[in-house]
Length: 257
Image 1 (cartoon, rainbow, N blue to C red):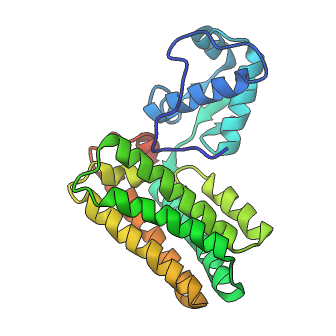
Image 2 (cartoon, rainbow, N blue to C red):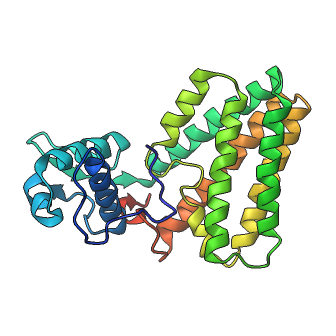
């Protein structure tokens, strides 16, 4: 499961968690929200017993949720037992974004060199057409911005599939699940910036250019464009860490000196 650091997570809002196989997932969503919102501070230790009392569920789903959040990278296991909320350096997050851009660049190059189906191209272009419609508005309201986030994630997923390589797709899924490394990880910065729409237009132009490079079988250009595209996320990371914007999870990142 990929953590989404842009859109809100569905929770029970204080209602009792349902019993059954989905209980661990519900606890996982609630704990993730608490970490990203700052209710569980970076470096703080988390004990199962405290969560049992706080959430009103048994230790079994809590233990499963903690393990899943460790696998996502938001928690780390302590040598003495239990878990703690992870701290991230800005450099580590930047490296994760760079890694995603590198793998996405490889996927784009492979798609250009090997070719992809007309159906794939139509799906991607339809997705970009919908983004164009959103960006025609002078200002993006909350619903439109949320729609942009969904379409942006959809395009990046489609692009990864263009490689027709299970290995590449698996690695993209893996790197995209790293905390803050997903394609929409810091798009929220643009929603709170006076230059928001301008930045989104730049990103959309890069989307269109990489599609053109794939169609024209320009592998090196397609790869370079996707690597450059990831630099927008790195720029947003720097702005998020150094600004007063209250974006989910940013408090977990320590700025580089």
